[in-house]
Image (cartoon, rainbow, N blue to C red; front, side):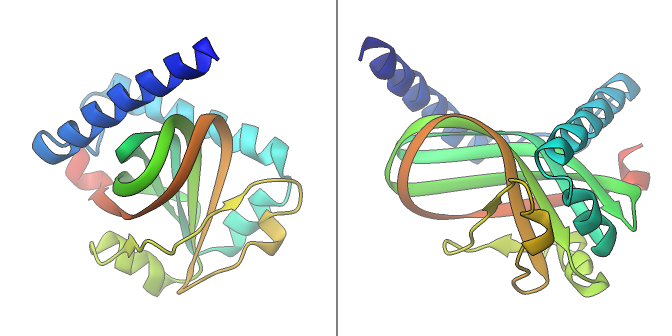
Length: 191
């Protein structure tokens, strides 16, 4: 019981800090140095390997898609008001083309904190172009498929996009409304 209260207190502090940070300072989408780029690339490769071990059909889904985003470390927390942030790499036809970050603000019943990986797969060029052009955000009803054996083979595309999560840690009770917004920085702009 005591550790649960501690976790909730930490999650509330995290959510408050995240909400303030998201609204006032923003975060850098692209890595600033070659060491940061290398670290992010390692995180993405490690994440793909781990998630691929959870579901061997993930690689087939990524190969079928026109492009994809890997956000290896999304942090989420809330107590009434919540937020989430993550950043990662964007691929087109298997080739790194840039970086993305995701912010999310929520309001409603929620308590706790969570860390997870988010994988967004674009079914075709039009869906990826919408993402790259800043015309892409998830609404409150968007849902993600938890990656388990075989989930990649059956991941549903909605409006040309499939979303998967894996590696969830922490505990989050939530019945909140809010959406995810994304920023994209092309590889050439970030170097």
